[in-house]
Image (cartoon, rainbow, N blue to C red; front, side, top):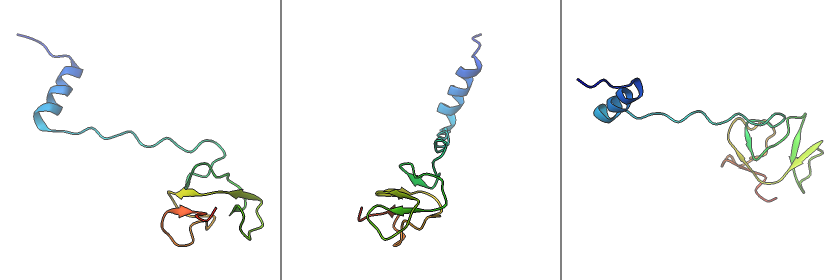
Length: 85
């Protein structure tokens, strides 16, 4: 009689029952980066779009908004902030 390793048994179970492994959660934002924006937008009191009328203290170009839009960079709510930058 053959014995299966734990990994082999798990692989067999996945193949037999059609189980699907889930992907690991996305990596956390690098230190100092707000997790709602990609690429990195600094965590600070306010961030405005480059070339806009905001008064900073930080500025950014086009970003994807992937969480709460704390800095109100995505005015039309389509998931892209600072589109005209």
